[in-house]
Length: 255
Image (cartoon, rainbow, N blue to C red; front, side, top):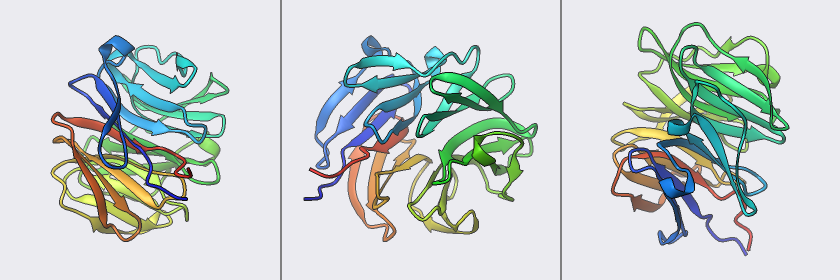
């Protein structure tokens, strides 16, 4: 039997992360007492581990049934978003030289960057293990880079949006990009992008559940929306009461 996934969300200024049931009931809340300190992007991996880009502590938390750990040291850089592909973890970071810090088997493997970057955005993997990074350059344009095998030099995908935040891939490797001022663009592959989902006040991060039939997006003004994909029909809206900064769905909805 298939049931909707649980909804995970974090609130930056409140330093809290909350898990909601498919009906919008609070199942679990984490606070500063649990090590949460100004969280931003979040990701629920295939194994069920919950990754939280904890900006205030300059680390990515791994919340697992067996306890809490961290991905690895980010030094003076602060995490903005996080994504995983197998044993590879990609972290979008800000600081003196924004970029993507890559960990393989919990050890730092490489640091990827683009010299045009002013502010970092979301990070995501396609099904082939390539990672993609959204950022905003000094001119104010929103860009997306591809890093083949999550390594090497960036490949500019030619985006010129208003201000980009979260990115994600559906099960057919179509890229979705959130423009904070416009809404969600859905692409054919990584090009021919069309503004598809609107009505947000400040769309930030977005993530899919496994199978990519449910899409969750957080509106920075304090709401989280879960919609069916690709129809866009809204199934659940959660009012968090404070600014949201990340949203994800449980990776398995089989019960």
